[in-house]
Image (cartoon, rainbow over all chains, first blue to last red; front, side, top):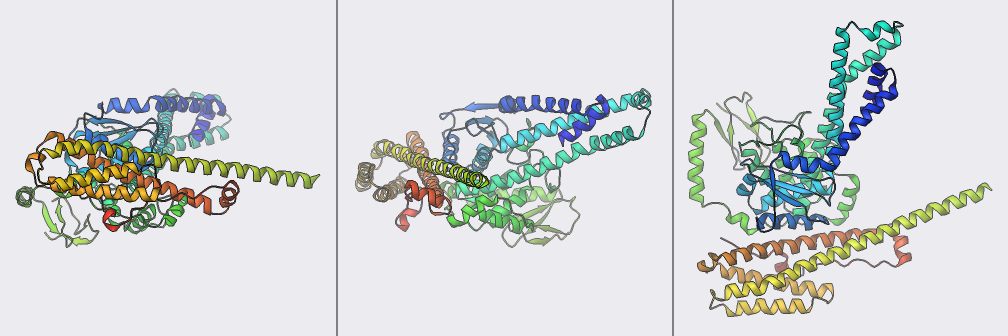
Length: 387
Length: 187
């Protein structure tokens, strides 16, 4: 797509298609090189992450090491902490031997060991599947196309102001106009198409990382409940921006209560991810694949066929029991009950409705919600909302 | 002349296939050995942690002499078998795991011990080491599975048979009680 855009731009502006191709490739090449060699340190600097060692946070370090072993990575990734109350994490690094994992301090404080393990497993999967490189390259491609299209629009606009210098000079019409028309269409369409492709790839990789995390930890519930906590947290990450968004575990720009299941989202809707993880009967990629297809009603699964074939022979890898900490990390029941009552009251005061699902989940429905049924994020039942 | 080219072409393709498969097998076998070394690293780490743990716990739990001795014995047995075969070793390690979990369960009854910073740090290390052991075992078994599939499935089985590759042995957890991760309950 980059090449086609470059080709037509060159044909029109420089009179030679080759020139356009060269410029497009040059811009893309330079940006790729920067992304390849400086991408991770840039990203970490932009997110204001600080590096930690084993002694700074033995628990986090241990969990990362556990996941490193489970995923079979050869080298321990660097660990960074972002001082931010928001709950999020990301992985970066151009290849598995030069990777970094960053988590926010909010995440460290809020998640128990199993949940943290799930999140780290997800990030390790990104590293192991080389998603970071893939997404960086896709992002650079997208960026180049957007920049080229943007400049082309400017030039087109100004040359139009100057009286259509080029088209008046080459008066022979026909071919030139067709090229111009195709060029304009491309200028408009290319960035949009590139973005849609980019987002589709990004979402696919997120599902795949979820599946791999379940496989590494042998415990999908950990990641599911971590995602639930992250979804419930209202704090947005301050240091994230549109460019770095796809790197995170969950989209840092998601809005509360908005189903972000559209073409322009880098991440799959978080509730759907939780549902898929909870619907898994085992922990193998095949199990995730099945749960994914059931949840989406899609024919095509998420995991590559080769991985699935191997996986089937392995038989279902067994789920493991939650670690003891998960059971005891909860506060005493009365205290939780009291806190719940108080928060329920606060929600009622701001006109939120409460719907109880038969699976035990309590849903809060925003007063702005106009529909008359909601889907339970925990079990997937459809519930009616009575006013 | 044409026939010579065709036969030559087939030979070259077979040769390339042979080399690629052989190298793939070597890669998988090395991965398996590396995975085995990983388990070893973690098991050694556990041997190293245990004397520290015993030292720390000893002052607090006066009446649990048997539990402490069981752990020490299981550790020494496992360590002495560490150069033995996979089967005997995984059994000894399983026993060490359950002895350790009994000790940590006993430690629950001593609030003073649970307030000890040293003990808490050891606890974190031990929990994590247990996790690492099971994760590295998991990875080892996955690697063994990959290698075995390659060795037994057509067409790579031909190459494997010609070059004498042996099947990888799975690291199995014997009894049902050992299958459960040690119940280390920290409140």
